Amino acid sequence: MEVIINTVISEFSDFNDLSEFVIVVVRLLLAAVLGGLLGLEREQRGKAAGIRTHMLVCMGSAVFIFIPQQTGISDSEMSRVIQGVIAGIGFLCAGTIITRKDEKGTSGLTTAAGVWLTAGIGIAVGLGREQTAVLCTLLAWMVLYVVPFFSDSISKKKSSYLSDDEDNTDI
Image 1 (cartoon, rainbow, N blue to C red):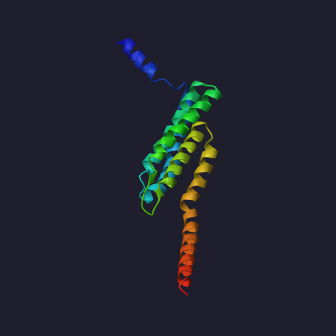
Image 2: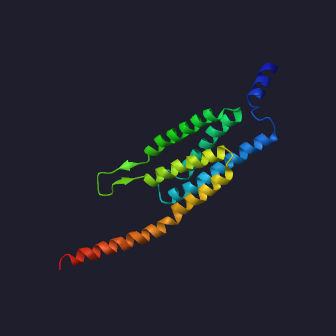
Image 3: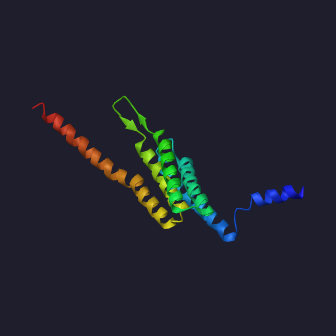
């Protein structure tokens, strides 16, 4: 019985000390929060990839980067891990893009781009680049929340301009 208990204890002893445990907790919590911030906008707009999806993508990306880093792999091996995460997320993003045969064209591109960027933020967190991850999240948040005010304004002006031109073609 003692052998079993010692084996179980050794299996759950990934952390060498308390500081390593704190780093893992901070990185995973930060990834969850940053991913959640980006997913919140998608959730508010009723998109399929919302808060939970973005949180999981960001934390998953951080874990896929952090664990190999923790084991001490080389930079070239880490490069392959990053490439794998990016390619894998690309497949997930492709599932959010829908091509319609009606006049609406393609939908889901912003959600796909957001999920892809969220994975990039998770990679930054996993690599210990927390400031870069926070800055990138803030910039992405501005794109998702602030830019639509300007683009909606431009779209209204454009549609108004086009309808004025249509009225003048009858003269």
